[in-house]
Each structure stands twice: as C-alpha cells, then as structure tokens.
Image (cartoon, rainbow, N blue to C red):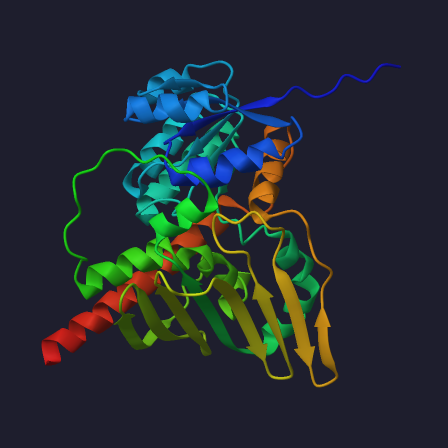
Length: 355
C-alpha cells in the first residue's frame, strides 16, 4: 500500500516586520516541509516584496489579496495590536483552516469575544502566539507545577534584554519599514501599559494559569498593586498581590545587559524555575529546575523551541486536530493582562494625585 505524504500547508503572513522575519520564517524552515510561507502582505509593499522574495512567496499590500489566495491555508496575524481583531475575524471569515494571532489577542475584551464568536461559528482553530505557554520544557513540567499550585505563594518573572532593535539585529538581518523619527519616550503610565501588553504579556498567561482562580476561566482575580515604577533606561518593576499570591514582574532593557528570561514559582515546600530562551532565539525549550529540601532536579533538555511547537500545534489543528485550551482561556489571558495594566495605571494615577 502506498502512503501519500500530507500536503504542505501554506502560510500567509499579515505583516512583514521583525517577528515574521526573525521568528516565524525560521520556524517554518525547520518544519521539514510541513509548512511553507506562500504569501506575505504588508501595507509597505516594498517591504512585503523583499521579505516574500527571500522565501519564494507571493507578496501584496492588501489583506484581501492574501485572503483570496487559495494557496494560503493558515493566516498569521502579525500586524500592529489594534488591527488584530479586525484582521483575525476577516481571516476566519475567509474560510482559512487555522489562524495564528500574535500577542496580544486583541486590545479590548469585546474584540476578543468577537474573534471567539467568529471562530465558533466557522469552526476555525485560533492560536495566540504565546510561545512560552506551549514551550516543550514548560509543558513537560506540568505534573510538577500541579503539585505546587495548592500552596503557591510567590511568582517572579525576570526579563533582561537589549533594546528590541538591537536584539533583532543580533538574531538575524531584519528589514524595517521606513518610519518618521520617533519622539521622546512616553510618560510613565503610557510606558508601563505598553510594556505590560507588549513584553510582560509573554508570561502572564503562564502565571494566570498557576493561580487558584484559573480553575474557572470566567473568574477575574483580585489584583492589588503594591509597587510600580519605571526603571531607566527601559525597564520596570511591578509588585502585585493576586489571589493572595505575591507576584513580582521585572524587566530591564539596556545595550549592556545580559540575556535572561526566568519565571519562578515558589510554594510552601518546593519551587520551580524555568529559564526560557530569549525572544528571537531558537535554542530549544526552557531549562526547568525543581527544588525541594531533598535537592534540585533538572528536567531533560528539550531541543524543540516554543516557536516550532506553536507552529506544529497549528498545523495539527489545520489538519483536523483540536487545539488545547478554549476561546474562554484566550479571553481570560487577555483579561488578566488588561486588568494588571489598568490596576497599575490607577495606582500611578493615585500617586500623581497625592504628589
């Protein structure tokens, strides 16, 4: 009996920026022919054409052209945040087999619910590009983490990276659209909101799902901001109390910093530390250590990255499989990030009013 190999799934990218160039295209190149870029769309038509040419894909400057392309099976929405919902809904409505939406899922809960409704009606699998959530090393630690949850007391996310443009250039040669020179850094409240929804959001879905309230995706945990400050030149330090769990969120971006991306869970009698490869780095899964009074146990290294894993899951779903998680989980993850951003903003507003 002759076995017919599965057809390569064609991927269309909405947006042609650094995330597509330095993350998604290299991940597809390692899919062993299961996935291939076939169409790149960007409002900057020259950028789209240049990025598409590097992989033999078509290019366009209109979303309609990409969605009308029969070679596109999966749409990856990698555009500015405020366009995610509109473009994801259009991709779902076009009859494509699966949709990837980069972080954040949407900028409002109403928009997230609109994506969910469209996906349910069409039966289209939708995945958010939260690579840490599907990181093979993190996934392998599920049994250990489940034992920590009942007595979880402290969570720390620590991120130290160079500024994004420098890091992107370190990872790959990135082409950027022509833009007018930027102004000064936004004031602290706007800066922290942008950082929470642009950087911290990588780990917030993981943190939310370890909290007691995660048993019900509709439950909104109570968030108290204990401390919130900008750490120059480009970082922050946030301390929160959420469901009686103390959470510390720290990031620092500096040309002189070392690379680190660590998520730590501390319970009464044990702790777990996951060291993730930094963004744009395709270096296998997280390194996970489990610590108790008996000693430290390190899980076996995973050679597949979170980026490769999310594309593998998306391909499975496009071929008739079912994605882990539910639309309600995606909305709950976004709600958690937005609630933290709102709570931090309100905290800073009170400080300004009392100054």
